[in-house]
Structure formats: structure tokens, C-alpha cells
Image (cartoon, rainbow, N blue to C red):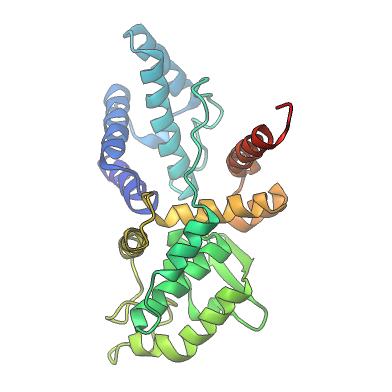
Amino acid sequence: MNEEINMFLEYLTVELGLAENTRLSYERDLRLFFKWFGQTSASVTRQTLIKYLQYLKAQRYAATSIARKLAALKAFFRFMTAEGYLTLDPAEVIEAGAKGTILPKVMTRREVDKLLAAPDLSTDEGFRDRTIFEVMYATGMRVSEVINLKVAGVNLPMKYVIAFGKGSKERIIPLGHYAVEYLHKYLREVRPHFLHPNNPEEQSLFLNMGGKHLTRQRIWQIIKNYGIQAHIMKNLTPHILRHSFATHLLDNGADLRTVQELLGHADISTTQIYTHLTNKRLKAIYDKAHPRA
């Protein structure tokens, strides 16, 4: 179990960029459950989780504490299922209770512009970083999909990339003209500078100075550093560009099914979280603009 929990905690830190205190809270809740259960995650069923919630209630845990522990379990089993370690998610049909919806953090379009403008385009690393940002914001790809992008997976004449998502599912994602322009110059003029003499045939799209593909940790660090440099008062992570991509599409009239397909969500209910953000924004505009609001 330690290995599975550690994989999940790494995902929380590197891909989602959660704070250390939040990560520790998830870890405590997961270890408490598996200490109570005494078996592996593959043996957990829906009934197991129901019995555990009944146990917590009998132990006089507060409702908010129980809801938090269930949220940790739901996140863990969702991760295990999405990554292919489990076939079925035992927590999927268990409700977390009426605690309110936790909305993903997004950037405003002005903040996106500031982030895109931060890299120094006169340097190879700066141009590479700007290209990464353009691609991430244009496609909504997960950071794991970005680091696994291959040169052969980029089709600039047809303006699309081929991403391999969770469970090795392949999907084609269109590219906007800004991303196409930056990719064109990156591939032609900049990427060759990153190729290492010992490995000139490396096929990963985005490379470090040693000629190897960038890691999740490195992209997380790149975005965080540029966010600070651009004076963006948010904790930027690779996932915030994905959230912003989806929210800005919906803001501008894209339908939910299209956004679901672009993001590679298996279930539209996962995509629906973004409608809460757009609905919240519409309500704020309405309240401000309508004379009888």
C-alpha cells in the first residue's frame, strides 16, 4: 500500500501542485483507512467504504471530518482507476455530502497573457518555455501528456497534436495559430540546440539542456517561476493552465461535450465542474448589471 499511496501523493504534489499541508492531510486520511481495512486497494468495495463511514460516525468524528476523509478516498480511487491500477472505482457512487463544490483554480485571460509574455524569447530555454505554455493553453493537455509528446505526434500542416492520456488513450487535439507558429519555429530553429550528441535521435518534443525529455517536476517549476516573475498572485501549476483552457472555452460558448472530448474526460460529470465556474461568473455579471438583480 505504501507504494500506491506514495504514487498518489506525488501526483498531488507534482501534477496538481497542492500545498504541503493538504498533501499531508490526504496522507493521514488514507493511512487511517488502510490501517482500519488491513488489505490492499484492489480488495476495497463500495460496501467496504460504507462500513468505514459508519465506523467513523460511531467513533464520533465530526461530519466535516468524515466528509474530508471520504474526499481523500474518492480522490485516491479516482487516481488509481484513471491510471489503470484498478478496473472499477469503489468510491465513485458514494456521495461526499453537502459540503459545497470545490472549484478548480483558474487564471484570468489577462493573467494567461502575462504568463505567456514572461519568457525571454531571445534564449533557447525562454523560447522553449513559451512554446510549452502556448501548447498547454491551446490544448488543455495534462502535464504527463505534454512531457510524453513526440515530434511525430505534431502535425503542423493540419494543426493538431496527438496526445496519449490516462490509460494510454489516444486523442487528437487541434492547435490554434499561435501554438502552431511557436511550434514551427521551435522545431526548426530551437529544438536542434537541445539535442545531445550522444542521443541525436531523441523523439520527445520538449527537451532539457541534456537532450532528454522534461520531467513533470521541471515543468511545474518552470510555470511556478514564471508566475512569480510575472507577479501573478496565484500558486501556478501545470494543471491551472488546463483548468483555464476549459473554463475560457466554456466562457466563449463552447459546448460541454466538445470540452469533454478535448480534455479527454471519460465521464462528462468530470467536465461539469467547469460549468460551476462559468455559472458563477455569469451570476456575478448579472448581479452587477441587471437593474433589478
